[in-house]
Length: 174
Image 1 (spheres, rainbow, N blue to C red):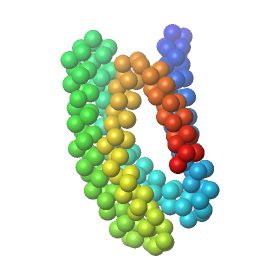
Image 2: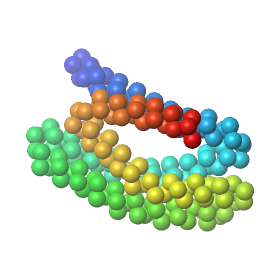
Image 3: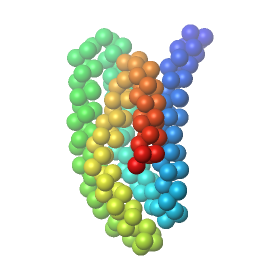
Image 4: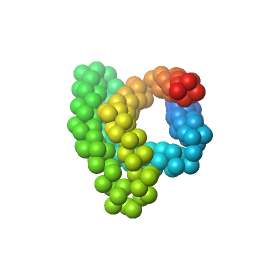
């Protein structure tokens, strides 16, 4: 029992810190946009919620990558590890097309839900840019799942912290 607890703790601490770093990405974006005004902040929040909904809805297959790759890695079946990762990547691109279509029609959804017209245009502009990044956003989830599955959680931690640092720097510059 103790060995499982400490192994779980060893795996989870870097992932908890990585998750906090990812939370920091949204926090720094919110702080920076908040300086521009309440309309922009409201648009960012609602636009991010729209993209987050698409992202979470379409990224569920990455959980399958965790299970399949972990099992194959535990069995030392490198061919199955590679196959499952490759299938996760293909699914990412297929589901990204669905997400792209949904994001391309976000204005219609916002009108249907009676959002303020001045917010709709700002949100639509934001989502119009973000929708092109959707495949890459989903790919990060697949690669994160892969790295966790092969016990490379430290890599996830380092990438998350570097991403946060770069985000803060670019937010200040731009």
